[in-house]
Length: 228
Figure 1 (cartoon, rainbow, N blue to C red):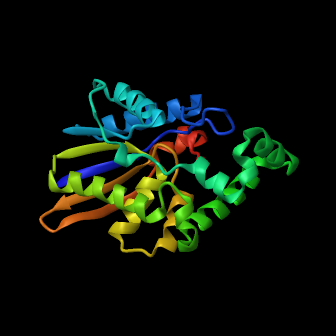
Figure 2 (cartoon, rainbow, N blue to C red; figure 1 turned 135 degrees about the vertical axis):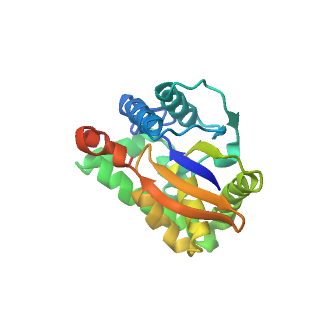
């Protein structure tokens, strides 16, 4: 039976001008994850990354810790949705990052305020009435991620590592569990950075084995657990 390990990238650079880059904490998370995979004797037969910088940086730090070369195939179908477009469609004034950061700062709890605003932006994206406003609608996103999984499931390897994002992983889980679109957001909210979600592939197709594994961030590494 083949297994596909979907790995969410380490913590990105929230609040920075370039979000698509791992923070120092994100690099450390990826390194600790790699050590955990090495202890589990995970020996990948195939490695895939999305096309985003944070995917590749996570792969590099993780593979270094596993003692493996930076040898992977890129599949942009594993890319995350465009969170910046979602924000701007929800609040057009936030096309200016300066305006958004100033608004968030005035709340005196910018991270919580951002999360509340972004949840509203996700709700709007999921609503069918706004579909024409987005370059990539929710159905388009779910379809491309599903196609990426189907490619791996129909050409199984012993163990495949996929370095991707939380939204793509959550969409995969929602699909495998036949969850309604409205439930996807609940999965997306709880998935932590540098976690592992396991999909097994057998004669009857792909099935979810585990979701959001992060035991490597317990004990002495519990300070590394993060969600954004």
